[in-house]
Image (cartoon, rainbow, N blue to C red):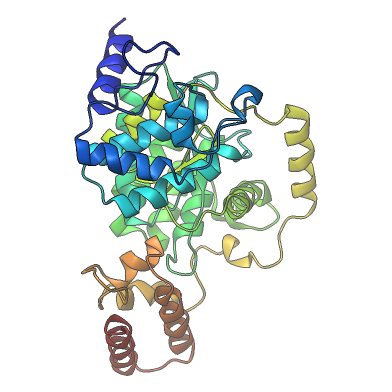
Length: 387
């Protein structure tokens, strides 16, 4: 009863949508508690969203606005309309709202299905809301997101399960792949979440020696985890997760999926709890037989060409120094005071990857540090001042 009352309060506060087809004074389900200006903005956004409902009886309506004005509702329209109202109530720029809601409408139309067999999970697999997060143990944004996800689970332990998927960004994080493999091994011995928290809490201290000590504390040898033959089953898990991320179009970490639907802003606890409470049902999962066949095929092809770095405890010579440079200069993306490292981790703009590639080349060429820094600062300044 407490949870039902909380949900009712949350719904009333943010968007005042009726779950009934009967309305006392008006058939429209457009939120009435928004300001006059926000109601106008709500309608302009809803008019740009194609009818998201798949029910045959609702097929005649062209847009989300048409569906709401008819007093109708479906799974998708309820989520999208509540999202628009939520963002407007929190003073998010309307142009940004348009982009986020259109992206979510596209994801709702075709929810992603992921390989979740034997993946770390908080909560019950039968929970009505499943959150899948793609994460990187050396990504600072992921460390913050990890705390948010713990809080979200603690707030909704009977309704939510959280599944962790690996996405090490090896081009900018020299210990990301090694940390991923250690965590996969930890999961095999029932200690994933303990190691998960340790890696994120000690993120600034990640090193070869730290990871070896962590493996030893778990009872594993270096070869057991990092040898491509002995440790291939751990590598397969990471590669499968990376491939899942590619198929879903994941572009950075952390990335959140609620019942297979990509959402923006999942690192914010209030926003994530709101989205959880807007969710009604989970998409169907692949059959256990299909997952078993896919995994058997993956094992046949491991190690994978092009993923040699996965089995190295650290990146090739010089890569471990990458962060020394990326933390020394500003982000090349305009309008931010973050470092190159932070913008590269979040893939804030295309210029970051171009500069990272240049930086790796200079390191491999053994260019003097002073020359690298000088060139780096010049390129960053050039990007930041582009019109």
